[in-house]
Length: 400
Image (cartoon, rainbow, N blue to C red):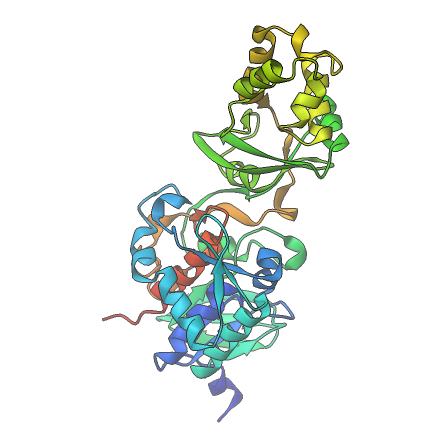
């Protein structure tokens, strides 16, 4: 077989991440010759670091309303046809186990490397070809064939699946290749932004938050019409933690973020109850019964209250005012940490130009976009992996 012939495939998949590997495996197992091309030296590095190395690979609460997109209905078809239980069944077939942590999040009991190996084994099962360390220099289309020029030769196929991800975590090789290819073939790009990302602050807020870096607190964080109740973490640059990462996907620059500290606690009631039972207790001590010591000190400083004041000397109105401030705390981020630490990229290839059933381009037959590069962004907690699996499965389907 000549070298030219060896580079002819039924399908080319660009990107050896979660979506790309999974899609290629299913294409190969359907009897088609498939190759995966990626400039990275190792496959699926974002899978490797996910979930603290345990890979939060899906979420049992998966539904289209847990995803952000200009078309809120677009994800429904793919998500309905490939579910979290379909993926856990695949894991079980490979001897992998999992556990539910919180809020429907499923984590692999083995390390995330086991998920990667499963994807590679599935690719091998379909006799898929994986070419890492391969730079993609040009993509063209003519006479029903895609031609991909690379540092490892020229590959051709009637089907091209773009799964090169978004702009998040550039140190791991993220590029805008998917958007460039999409534009080249007439697709619109919904403006992109870092999502699931910590906030940064300047001025007094930066100094205050940095002074208690490492302290966490349960909050309700709201911005852009969305609200999430989870933990918030103070950092040396600002705010992070699940609640903050979630709301960051909805936040727009210049907006305030509304914070309700301890949303499940009647702070005013607790302080008044403490005042009645232990009237000689200081306000600082009473607040430390609800918050970490450093956070309690910061709260009193920001509210201009004397930490040494005894509860007996404070009116109910004062305690209620303090509680009200903690349930309507407005902060205005200077920005986010950006793509450097963002878990995903919001925006991307406009779904108006794609089939919701097959992820195929409405402009160019045989061209598909899947995973993070599409304008479908999931919540924190395994949703983006489920979108990777579901969109990949949709794109792998052979036309009926």
